[in-house]
Figure: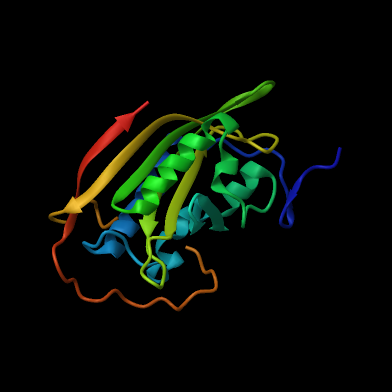
Amino acid sequence: MQQPVCGNRKVLSFPRRGRAMSDRCLKQVLDYWETLRAGRAAPMRSELDPRRIEDALEYTFILERAGPGTTRIRIAGMHLCDLMGMETRGMSPASLLEPADRGRFGALLDRLFAGREIIELDLVARAQGRMSLSARMILLPMRSDLGEMTRALGCLVTDGIIGAPPRRFAIARQRITRIVSGAPAPHAAPGFAEPAPRFTPTEGKTGPHLRLVYMREED
């Protein structure tokens, strides 16, 4: 049987990724996003410099809200390609989920793009005849060049052997963190080179700072 090909490489099976790698990648992306937003509700997409999250790029992706209820993957690292066995650009991120959880995921995206909330998900993929695969995902809101909350920076890292794609996930747990006015969040300092305006430094801070004030965990 011909093996599925993603880009210029075959998708076979991949080594196990531990929880330590998942924690490290997610923290790097969150910390960088936190630094970029600099007290605002969300940073601008054009402010992203992929060199700052180089170690996590394989697991990182950018979402675009094309309209009400319509979200697409604009850019994705190779890990999403490995999971799906195909190029994921232009796909709905809900394609990564089991059909039964896509409505729930869509509602979470609505909350994400409404702004001032961070979404974290614990995921699990189970399929007959294949090993279980767990994953963690974080979704962070961003603004477009027009200032609209229509972009998101995401990171998805799995723990286990991917095996034969596609692998789709059920939501095991969700955590929603709301951003409100106050001091900067106490993160340790929290890419993608798509055709977009060149990276420019953030402007000086104005107005009140923001902080993450609570996290709600839901099964």
